[in-house]
Image (tube, rainbow, N blue to C red; front, side, top):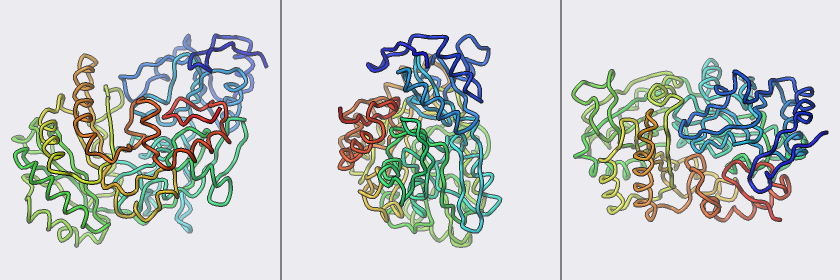
Amino acid sequence: MATIRSDAAAGGAAAPDEAAVAQFESLFRGKIIRPRDRAYDEARKLYNAMIDKRPRLIARCADVTDVITAVNFARENDILLAVRGGGHNGAGLGSCDGGLVIDLSALKGIRVDPKYQTVRVEAGCCWREVDRVTHSFGLAVPCGVISTTGVAGLTLGGGHGYLTRKYGLTIDNLLEADVVLADGTFVTTGPDDHEDLFWALRGGGGNFGVVTSFLFKAHPVHTVYAGVTLWPLEQARAVLKSYQDFIKQAPRDLYGFFGFLTVPPGPPFPEPFQFKKMCGAVWCYTGPLGQAGKALEPLWESVRPAFEFLGPMPFPKLQTLFDGLYPPGHQWYWKGDFVRELTDAAIELHLEYGAKLPTPQSTMHLYPIDGAVRDVGAAETAWNCRDATWSMVIVGVDPDPANRDKITQWARDYWEALHPFSAGAAYVNFMMEEGQDRVRATYRDNYDRLVAVKTRYDATNLFRVNQNIKPKT
């Protein structure tokens, strides 16, 4: 095969060679999109509009064979490679400048096995599509809190959301995965096949290959008791203290994440609250609907909400509640940490920065990751911070690029103030490009084992546009 000369080994991009590209295209069933093509600008867009990358080629795969062909092309021609599933990654790691993007968005297959309560999902799906199919069988897979999130990226980073306290992380419900490796080999990995790779995929991100499909364990979830409660900022100190004590003792059927927010305009929020900075929580109760009030009552006795929008709803409705607030194409800057305790000093800092939300869509969330997450040992998956109580994310968001610096500085300042009170590690899906030390700290005692798996399956670091785990050289 003709070659593309490249400085990609140093992180650069390849120079074009039309003969190599033409040969690649002749072997490819899907669509190769180039900068000169009318579809290029739309195809290269990412969820986070703060990230603007211009790949040399976008390979929109039609099937697994296309994925193998694209991986072989990138490796043989030493071209920088990125892999895109849903394109939702905050750091824009589903694309690259000057290289090849393997675009999986056309891989949309979903198949439920109601007898065994499993679902096979191809890597181009988003969770909205999965929820729609599983819901018709009275099932759900633990996932995130925004339905437009891609299945692949969320899963490979760990995956937490409304069902986490009850059923664990998304990776705790992963039964097997189909993977195209750096040498172009296709493997199915699970507890009894390529066990080291299966271990690494569960939290290690996209470092080890291109996952083309996932097999998940699904759970009986149909109608949940869910919604939003709000409190005035003046009560935030009392709410955070009460919430901390409450959520640690709450039954696993109850999930609720805390946040600082600017109340959106329009229903269901009353007009006096709209555009007002408040604190709040979003709840999901998977137990018997008639017992939801009893589950929440201990918190209400301490800090009664000023506003409640709670009731039975289909699980997919809960998953889509905030999709309209966070459409693709906004400016995003986020930073995260795992948190064990909310000390008095940490709470005071939350009050200070939570009152300074720079734009209406900027926020801070504390997502509970206790409960069933702790049923899995720290060494059983690449994700190992299973002694944490929350996954914290600080998010600067705005549609206007003119506010980019403002939202970025607020998020950085907030994070730097709170980081000394964290567990040190972070959820990789809540990280920007923050450097190797940050990646190492995130995996703690599992890092060296991840390096060994990386070295075995991707010794040349072909898959490096990610929160990278470098192989031994």
